[in-house]
Image 1 (cartoon, rainbow, N blue to C red):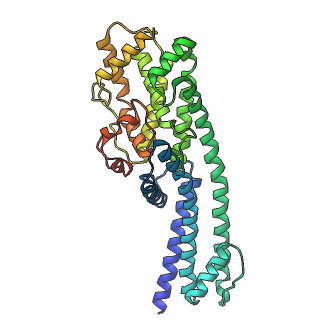
Image 2: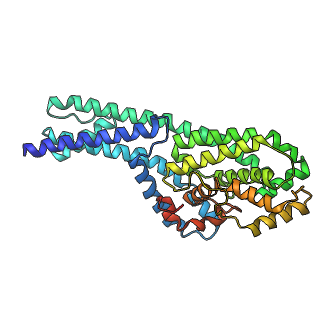
Image 3: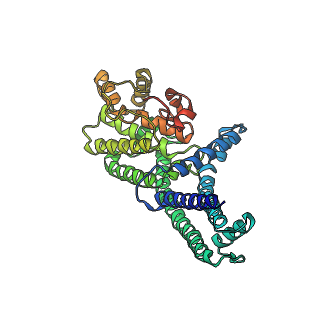
Length: 361
């Protein structure tokens, strides 16, 4: 019996230590770390919400259901921490000589700092104090974590809404180019690339540090941060390759910051991609689709380069850098339909395999 009690105390301490280490890595460490406990929570909740979302009859209903997925999972996470900490201390208290019932009541009372139960063995008073401190610490972590999440979310969505005004809903590179050409002129882009570069930099920093943000959906059903990212990158690629506007070094830098951000997030979620693709490697966009877009731009008065063969090679050479991470993140987040991004995620295989990081690049 004594050996079993000692084993229970050791097991309880290990459970509590594991939870604390997971909480620290999730909330405190200022870099993205793959925390197994958090990953399990989000995967389980994803399966639950996908099951419920199958009953949706419209895209709007599906989006409304999935919009609750990330916030709910975020709240389930500290609840899981609390449950495991209480369970771990139940083992410690039982191993210290309490009955199972008294151990459960004492652990719950200590964690919630209600203080209505006091253990009979005086030696376990210190354990009560430790559990109460852990409970307060986890609450403090959550209080500091949620404002940071929603602050980053607000900054991200401000640019997504601005893009919707110019690129339509759902956004598309063709709509973006045509509308800007008619209203402001294509010189407008020269003053905007630096802002989008900064958006990608902040996106990588905030979403890698707080991975739950990846799954927070936009307030508008047809908008998404990932389809917005794809639209900006495609617009920059078309400006550099197809539209006859002259050189644009800042557009090149924006594309680089964009595909580095998407690759960083894809790497965090174990989504495979080629980190050094060949310029002529296959992409999910077919030349016939690109030529149809070129005709659309030309009909709208957008100047197009004369050598279309070279323009296509240049566009494909830019797109190959972000094609696979873009589609994988669209599948991971179940992004709403948008042209040249979430409309072709079946190119990667089943969505479930993508979410689990089991696709082929």
